[in-house]
Length: 319
Image (cartoon, rainbow, N blue to C red; front, side):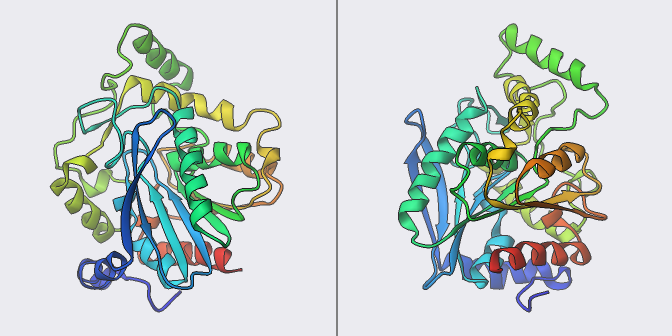
């Protein structure tokens, strides 16, 4: 445990009075052209004399604004931080006008944008570059590393979406429904399993186990329309269910030479745990650890889980 960790005891006040002023003093925003010349937004935090840089690849319906606490820890540990808003998220280009919907035509669009972003970061930084990727961002990171096996010196995949959970719907049936909807012109429509954002998300239904960590981002989300992604389109859902076969394709994980750690959440009901272990077993230098008592967003756990989780990440990057 580091002395700069923010505990639940005074979390909301410390985030407002300590964390945000600190990280914002190093913050710059920018835009680059994605693979199809669309505007992709990003945020970077640049300190003096960094030891390395960390690229953050966020999850489904998230954005660069969800990572204030972790960014604080990375900066305090001597790392520059770069965070992309994947297309359809945050302030990046969206193909659908409804800000509560998340859509992508092809999952490879994320990878192609991410390659351009990583090329930019590589030109900005002289030292090692690390990856922290969560959920959907972990799928993007995995596919990127399979194509670019030597780019990252180290990577942490947190609850990576090697395969999404289909909940109570059998996987084959869910894929059939999503595919059929797309065939019949519903690709950009809200999936039947999703509900519009109302501003009344409940902690009990969230992917966190810390109420104050939930409340901090929930308040920001309610006040900020472009952060109110909450639903998938049929097209996004179909692309998500295809990801497993892409990532675990014969010979692909074996290409990765990056030193890799995977954080798996014991109580995850968003993505499947078993494919994470299969992926880890096939990467040359990979370790996987299950965080007991954690839901999908391990970084949003109670202190007794969150602090060892943050140690797991920082100790690895500092080795």
